[in-house]
Length: 295
Ligand code: HH2
Image (cartoon, rainbow, N blue to C red):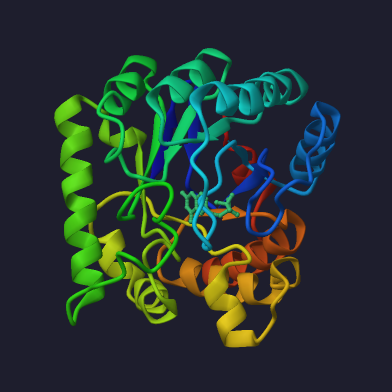
């Protein structure tokens, strides 16, 4: 399997890690850490050094307490200089932009981003599919409900007895919308949207039955990093201290078919996923496999 994006290909012959860069004052686990462009560049240097295969840059939080939507001009002001710097500092590393706004995606793609990570899965901005098609961008279609302000709360967390069937059905609609707009299937990956309109039991069902998400026929990306359900299970309140729980969830997801992992703490996740993958393959993860990313 491969994931095609605007400037190259990510071969999914090994677990791939997207390092998170939140250029937001209010993100739930790392908000406000990046005060200057140099702070963002230093973080990106570290994520790449620790083994990230791509960088996911976002300028609007969807925090679980309910988020404050960000104006387009402000979101652009936050993300474009960081995307530009990431491309100049690390030309081999693909950049993803985490946004639900087509105008932000468009400017980000112009600045050198090659992947659009839309946590609304093309639901919130009708122009998003055409922007992605025009740039031949890689696209993450994530499952969520509601808008930016409430998608990470429990307002829309009402499911039938088979929560995974509901997620699969809604994701299938989002995939159809993307295909009808002309997005190449090889450019698409799906994400069950852990914690988005999902209580702990819903997120756990999605992870436990990830094979049913994989059955949609597209690569699966998951974002469990430091999330609330890990705090619920472990009793660890501070998001930054949830690394162990994050690794547990990522390794379980790898076993159930996930190939792309969006994380804050690249180094420990890189080590854990590489060891788990090498066991699954009964062979060490090779350097050649690790290099099969073009940007
Ligand atoms: N989770 C968050 C943001 N973007 N994108 C994808 N594809 N999958 C996810 O699970 C996902 C995502 C929320 O996490 P974070 O960026 O750490 O926090 P915040 O939204 O508060 O900035």
